[in-house]
Image (cartoon, rainbow, N blue to C red):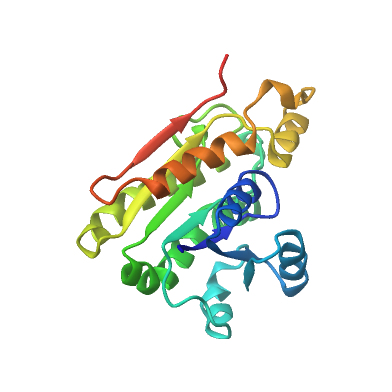
Length: 229
C-alpha cells in the first residue's frame, strides 16, 4: 500500500485524486489549512488522515509540521492547491503578488523541502499540478502565470537534484478544467461559465495516477492534458 500526501483536496483536481487513491486502498494524507478544515476533509474522505498548515503562510509550515506526526515514508506528494487572480499588471499590488506566489510557488517549495526525507526513504515521487499558464502567459494572467512558470522551474531543478536519491518529479499541465477555480476565472473574465465545455477533474486525476503508477524504470517529466475539442 502506497502512502500519499495531497494538497488542495477540498475541491477540483485534488479531490478527484484523493478519491481515486482511497478507492484503490492507498493511505492518503490530506493537507488542510486549519483543524476545522481537516475535520471536514476526514469526514468527506473516510479513511483519510490529515495534516494541518496554512499554505498562505509558507514561513510557518515548518513550525506546523513540527507539531504533528507525518508519515514515516511518502510514495507520492501531490501538489494540487492553488489560487488565481486576474488583472492587468498596472492594477496588481504587491499584496496580490505576494499572496499568489506564496500559495502557488513558495508553499509547494517549502512543503517539498520539509517532506524530502520521507520521499527519499520511499524513493517516492513529487507531482506538481501546474497549468497551461505555466507554459504561456496571456494578458491579465501575469501573476498567476508567473507563479506557475516558477513552479515549472522548481520541478525541473528538483528533478535534477533528487535523481540520485531515486525521487521522481512530474509536472502536469492541465488545460481548462471544470472546477470552482475555473468558475472564478470565468467571473473575472466576465464570461458565462459552462462546465460541459471543459475537462472533468477526474480526467486530470487519471493523468496524475498514470504518472504515479509508471514502472520505476521510467519517469514522466512533463505531461500536458487538454479538453478534447
